[in-house]
Image 1 (cartoon, rainbow, N blue to C red):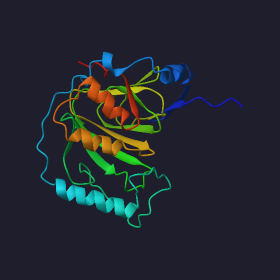
Image 2: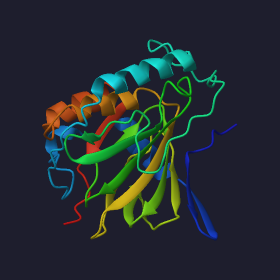
Image 3: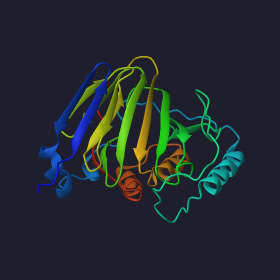
Length: 239
């Protein structure tokens, strides 16, 4: 029996589209492109240095508590689901661990459901009030990713398909399919994201949030590779 090709699912209010992604499968697995030839500039995002909220120790304690409650062994990949017995409430505009985080000093990050909360099954996070730009083109080896535009318009390319997400629109991008996105609005925009399984993406963000400047192409390649991703192209140019 022929294996099904990855499929791309776009949800918009009142509309739904599905398309095969056969055409990009060979490009993904061949590894023809590399990060070294690309300018890792995150589009037109300005460098923003924010003072950490002074709650790092408390946030670390919260993470340890979440790990204990979710019974997550950080050395293993667990996808059976959380063993939590209480609901987890995160207020609008807040981080799950009540700290202010910026990826490379550029992209705001708010954790909504941590890896430990779901015992590794799910990681939910938000880029709130961000400026124009976005990450480099990349793919995840073992994670599917879901995007939901909360405010503002976001340009996406997944495989060889191109989409514009407006408030209320969502997009599902399968693992092993290259994708890139960027915020293109003039006013701050907010994007809600989820990956499953969680993998070590949260650890990648924690590491990146401790860096006050953009990594070099070589550093980016190493950071992405260490957390189950591969950079295959530059960010979208939205300047």
